[in-house]
Image (spheres, rainbow, N blue to C red):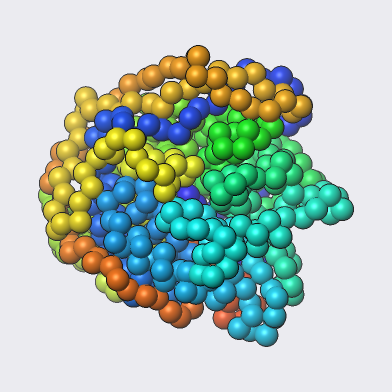
Length: 493
């Protein structure tokens, strides 16, 4: 939802104990009408069509980080179960290639972000996290969480025996919190370390003590870089921790982070990331918008969804990209290029990265709910070649119920069903189109090979092709690669 290397690879990123009246919320209700669901299902069908033997192609074989991003997208739309199963099988068969550098002469090495991401993948696919690919991913993730003797790093998910500077960051920490909370409970120390990455203003930094934000606990300074993508991930992880584990302080921190995201939304409904991804893009908008709805801001989430929808290839706007119906452009430049020229093979990677994160705000299922059985229909779940996405200016989505809780650093977050509210979600989407998607994946595939990277969510570890790739490819395309691609293609993913 959604990034891990020695150097920043997505958005470069850069608490005191007070009683706060907050309204932590339960995950968005699957019963709510969602006018964007069919568009999300069409995007998921396109993404499923990009799977090859269960994996998403990367620069050097299957990209397991991006494959897991795809699993999250498919689980969010609940529209491609066969493809989701095939991807889960492929990831399970290649866990060590993704979570370690053992192939490169580092026995016993473990990559923190990748390990946490595989744990969450098992949860998302409704597989046993204690036996995923024959490995206990819950135990492996817990093993990478620093103990009390680690000082300021206590609770941080850290690399093991990689021979490189620790690559653990807010994305990996959030995925660890999500995966552990959903698989039996998350240690309070891991939640506390994530909260320490939140500055008093509410936003989260990507890397501890890096890029202008020194110190164990994030502080707002002129050089501190806060990251909307990391904040969107952290908000959803903390909501899951509050709901699943009743973690102390999680609900208050989630609310504070959501308020910060709300303040950063642009007039057109979009979000940008940080560093080279600061311009408005569908990756940041998809993840931030998903977090806003999970946190009880449906109107803001609808504005984000409408902006993302404007960047989707549809039958009516496809132009030369008429074979790519459903996919979502990273930005307006990419959409214009595709309509004029189609999507050449060398540009497909950008679309494979943009689509799964962008569709999260359309699917409207929080990261903390991925893999759970729906309580009702979430929209058009189709594996056929066509899906209809109709949105009108008067369409609404219903917000999840909120719960008022008083929280402090010394008290646990609890959810009381006695104080619930429901808000209509006014969609400002202007599109009303029939989306015809390419053929769907029939599943039954297995994956092999190595790969790295992915969109924002994928940047949490990947296969290493030598430790140089640890800085470039483990969590996605490295900063230099990404920035170069962005100059031509707007590759934020």
